[in-house]
Image 1 (spheres, rainbow, N blue to C red):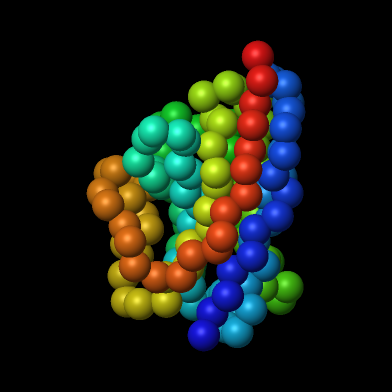
Image 2: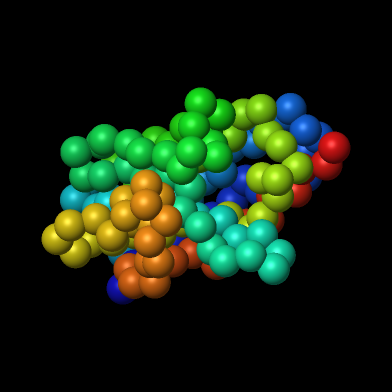
Length: 130
């Protein structure tokens, strides 16, 4: 069983930065497709960034150039560096892992497709004030 635990959320003013971390327990990340999602109040959960097993990355248009996803396979950690934060980035952020063939997370991030499978963390709140 894979357990994902996010940390690093908090409150920051617009223009600031935060770094989210996701610790994975129970399975290595080298073969996984990993991603970050977010859900703002009253809105559906959306894919933000994905890093695939070959370390290729993709981002939602809303965060391109501001957010960077990375992972450390040795530490079983997934990261999301968020710079130039905006009030509209306020949301609960979730990390997700997909160990199946293919990468459904990529479809959610790039095309906005619904993604409900895989493993999920409990979420961490990010609040950006203007």
